[in-house]
Image 1 (tube, rainbow, N blue to C red):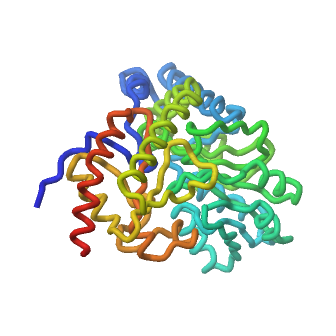
Image 2 (tube, one colour):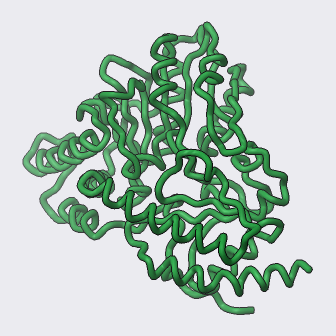
Length: 385
């Protein structure tokens, strides 16, 4: 068996991104002597509080939010759970939640648990391109709807939901709207002065910050109950803040805001080159969600009836990291719930690979993958014959 080599071409940025040099340098300031607990009132604590507030301002600037609307959490999952459970706690008479069939496992698994406790969940379907119809979301609303919770961008296909249009419908109906923007933040423009959502989640490690810091945006005037009680984060999230990770997140947000449009164009060009090359060498391939608006960095490719796990493993042996889908889901033995919701049969879903590019990918990365793929696909096909 060929031994795997360390990945030198990393195309799994939707799972996590390499920590940016700028973030590492900013984090060092928190790890030196003289930086204390942000809640302490001595000089070391005030230095820590200043760093915390500076990071809060950078996150707010990326989102078009006010700094006091930014609540730091440990990750996107915690932010999602805080939003959903906090919204439910606002009014015990509202026991209905609207979502989609293609949400991240962190949302889907919590909602399944809540159903066991008596909460009703309406799951709005997507079409074969992964698109969500705002009118279908509007039709799912009920008098006791406590929350609509939807992703801005799908983590597996990159398909973008029409969040602004849905937000208009939820605002008109008086229903709070939570958006999981973990994949969208820093990749597409987000301006919360123009999109009237009450709650929005993001996670630092998708932005080239380190793991360990997430955000829940809570719009001014909208109150939810905390998951963790304490005085930190304006009593919204108890426990000492993970200052190095949060400072890294602030630096990553500043970096993303600085060149968001430039990076989006560059990475989209690489993705399009990759997709054209794949179709040229394997005409039976299908780009899932190609007919919908997508993130500029994401390509989910179906390789007909070939075994996706074997393709992924072969690429891995050649130092190319890709994935079958969500890093937070089960392994390759089960088909992606996103692809099956889009109408793919089990075998086709299991033949799919997600390529997700990022800031540090180059044209040479794409060319290397396109050089490797014909031989790998031929080997996998021969093995299946």
